[in-house]
Image (cartoon, rainbow, N blue to C red; front, side, top):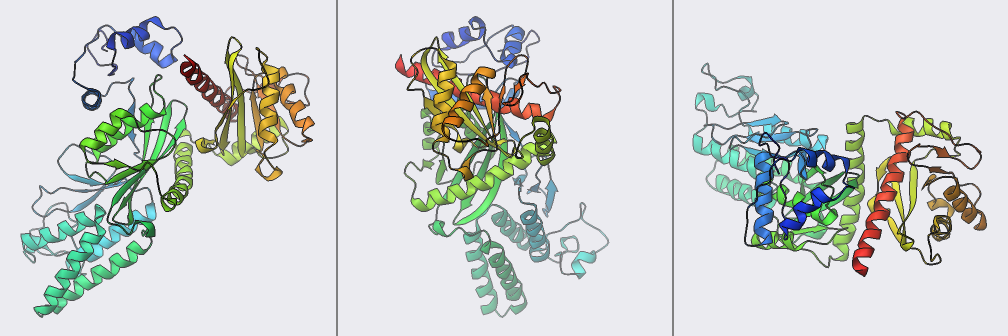
Length: 515
C-alpha cells in the first residue's frame, strides 16, 4: 500500500488478497493507527508467488527494503553494545559500536550482560593482542606492544598469516564456537611444544586457561550433546512484543538478544512470532540445529521456512529442557522489565507508593491482576484474568475462562462467577496486591460479594470505568478521578485494557471455532 507520494505504507500477504484488502476499507473498528494508514492509501501494488513460504520471504525482503511505517517489524535494542570486526582491513581490529551498518563487517551482539561484555573485551585485548589503533603507526610499536597487549603489525612484528590466525580465533570466540576454538588451541599448543617453541606454547596455554575460566559460568550441563539451540521468550505488551533470545552453542550459553516487535492490529501471537523470527534469521544466518519456545504454535509458513534451512523445532521437550526454559523465562522477565522501565523512564517503586496513597490501599500494588467479561449479544460469555508484576505483564500467568453459570447477558453475575473461581483457588500467599475490574460500581459490587462469600475481607480492589476513567473503590460512594497524566492511573488503564484485549481475543477465537 502506497501513499500519494509513492512511499510504501504497508507490506502484507494473504491467500485471498481481494478479501484482505477489502477488509481494510470496509471495516470501521480499526485500531487508530490502522485508521490513519487507510486514509493515506492512494495505491495498491501486488506480486503473485507460488506458495506461502515464498510470500513470507518476499514480505520480509520488502519490509527490510522499504521499512514501511505500519508493518510488524523487528527493532534492534540500541541500549546494548556490539563488537565489530572489519575483515576487509589488512590487520582487522575489534571495535565497540551500538549501530549496525551494511558495510560487510562482522557484528557480534548485542551484549545484554555488561559484565560479560567487559570480560570479553579484556580477554581479547590481553590474550589475543589484536591492534587497537585506528591507523597503523609508521613510527614503530606503541606502548601496547611493550606491555604485551599488541603484536605490532605496524612494525612487521607478526606476519599477515599469523595475525589472520588470531583474528580467526577471536571470531570463533565471539561466535560461540567454543569447543572448536579450544580444540584448535590445544592442537596449536602441542605442535608448538613439540617444535620447542615454548614461549608460543605458553601463550596458547594462557589462552586456554582464560577460556576455561570464562566458560565455567556459561556452561549448561544438559547440552553436553553437540547441538546448537535457540530459545525464545516472548512477552506481549499491548501493540508490541518484546522477546529475548538465548543462543546455546555446543553446550554453552553463547549469546543473548533482546528485540521489540511493533505489532499489526490483525496479527495474533503466532503471526507475530513468524514475522519476527524470519526477520531475526535474516540478520543472523548462523542457523541453529533446533529452536524452542512456549506460548504459541509454530505456523505452517514458519515451519516451511525452518525446513528450508534445516532447522528443527522441539515439539516434545525433555524435562531438563523445560526446566532450563523456565529458568531463562524468569531471567527474561527481569530483562524485559528493565527495558520497559528505561523506555518509559518510570520508577515503579515510587509509582506504587503514590498509587497506594491515592487509593488508600493496604499494600503497595506490586502484583496486580485485571478482570474482564466479554460476550456477543449475551452468547459465548468468556472472561479473562491478566497478571502484572511491577508494571510488566507476565503472560504465563494469564488465564481465560468460559462462564458456566450465566446463560444470558448479565455482566454482574458473570463477574461474580469469575471472582469466585479465581479466589477460591488462591491461598493468602498467592493473592495479588491489587485487583482491577473493568467496569463500574456494579462490577465492583459483584467481586466484593464473591470475596465476602469466600470470607476474604482484606483484598485491595478497584474498578475503572472507560470514557470518564473514574476509579471506584469499596469505601467511596463517589468515584475518584486522577489526573490523566498520573502514572498510577496509566498503570490501572494498562491492566484494564490488557484484560479487555485478552478477553475479546478469546471470545473471537471461540466464536470462530463455533462457526
